[in-house]
Length: 295
Image (tube, rainbow, N blue to C red; front, top):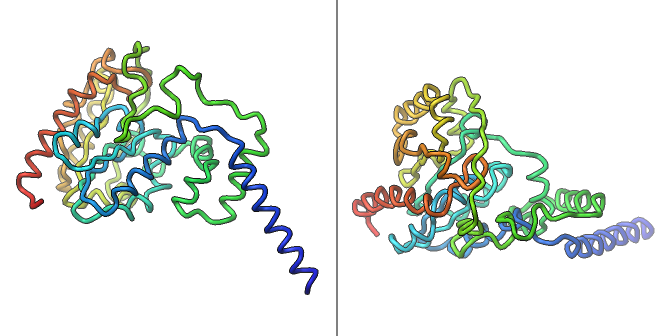
C-alpha cells in the first residue's frame, strides 16, 4: 500500500514539475490574445455591458471602443479567430453574462452552415495556453495532455507570423478590437465558399441558445460583393428564416456587402477606416434600443 501511495505521489509531483516547466516554454502569439479577451470579459462580469461575439470578422469588423464611447457601457470584443469555433468557450462566456447585458452576435457564414465548426489545429494551439484551460475549467487530463503534446512533442515552436505582421500578441486595444493592422497597407481579400444548402435554424439555436435573448442582436458578417452576388439566393433565404423566427437582426445581408478594397486581407478582415463606418450603423441601432429600455 505504501509503495502505491509513493508511486501516486511521485507521478503527481512529476506532473506538476512538467506543467510548470512547460508553461515557460511557449511565447505568446496572436492566438494568445483570446485569453486576454476572456479576462477582459471577466473583469466586467458584474457590470452591465455589451459583448461582441464572433470570429475574426468581429475582431476586425466591429469597433467595441466606438460603441463604448457612444453608449458609455463597457464593451468587449471577443472576436479573434473563427478557427477556435464558438462552442469551446461558450460556457465561460455565458457565465459572465448578466440578464441586462447586450450581446452583438456576428458569426461568419461557416457557423450558419455548421455551428460546431472549428479548425482542430487552431483550437489545439489555444489549448496549449494553460491560462485558457484554467479559465474554461478543462479537466486535469485535458490540461496535461494538451500542454504535453503541444510543448514537448513540438519542441521547435515557431511564432505564427513575423513580428511586423498584424498577427501578433499585441494586436488589440483595451476593448479587444484588433488594431495591429491600422496604418498598414491592405493586401486584399481571399475568396471563399458558402456551401450550406438549407439553413437549419433549430440546430443553430441549439448551438447558440443566447440568440433568443431579448438583448441579443444579430449582425451579418462583412461580405465581399463578388461573394454576395454568387450566393445571393442562399443568403437572402437565411435572412428570411431569421426574420421568421423574430430574432433581432440589426440590418440586411446586403447592407453588410463591401467592395474588395474595403478589406485589409483574408475573407472578412475590414480596414480600420471601413470598420468605423460600419460600426456607426450598429451604434444607431443600439441608441434606439437603449432609449426604450431602462438603464
